[in-house]
Image (cartoon, rainbow, N blue to C red; front, side, top):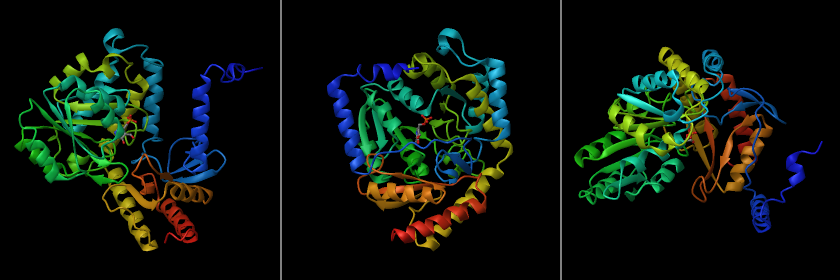
Length: 407
Ligand SMILES: Cc1ncc(COP(=O)(O)O)c(C=O)c1O
């Protein structure tokens, strides 16, 4: 049988565009920077089965506290399908929303110590849907230079004046805030944890500056929710500032079960306002209800198992210490994101490929994801790792790092 895709054979795509795409893909291949998608044959876990490679230790997922294959989370997803069916079939204000969305939104608000929350199909959508509705031309939106791409795109959709402060530079932030005194609102947005560096944003200083200049403080805590603080409540808990950030955006697609979804947690009024006017709320389907069930179960599980967060911290400390002993110089930090700068993109990709051949899955990142010349491998630690998994990974890093002259 001929597949439809074979029959049309690409003839429907404009020839000039087809030729350009093929040429650019070829150039990426020649420069050794073409990304290869690896196919996982089972659930995300400490050890996964990769098509063509068999079992490998997994050092590149955001499954920080191991909830992707947690039985109670998986069961909640199954039960969610039985109870709510497969999907939402339209947007919330038209065809109704599901009771589990309300329960999840209450659960998120309780977990983060906010009055309310509102869910989206992803944190990308949450970040895209936040700024444009609440800020206009008379406002100033102030962003850390290394904020996540979804924040940058959200800012692009907003008519407020844009100002960028140097990465985590509080003197520069103060200058920018001072120069924005006359605006109606000033809003400062930062990643809580910067995913390529594993650095934690200086929330106490940002809070102080926001108070001094009457600015709105927003964090995207996607890499900290479920991860940082004694009980996984994120960067604010890490700093003893639980409930003290004006607006928190975050994902349900990483530590909290890793399905999909994102949210904005803040006051009831802000969430109600977004329900009325946020475009990625109004014009796209809600989170699939079974994902909402899984995310809620993930929050409940974490609430009753704070030891997962302690185990994650112990695993991270162990891995960082052993890595230093081997002679690697990872970027310092307190998060389970452990990046090791290699330099050239092609070298980082070569290291990642050799580690995979040794049974360790760790991804290499290069430009444009990180600045030119700062390509890296990024090891991500999970509470699902046992010492033997980390030791296996460290043995491979020792062997391959020695062969490539990196240590
Ligand atoms: C800081 C940050 N914000 C937002 C996102 C997007 O999250 P989601 O997958 O829920 O769209 C990511 C994902 O990589 C992220 O790291």
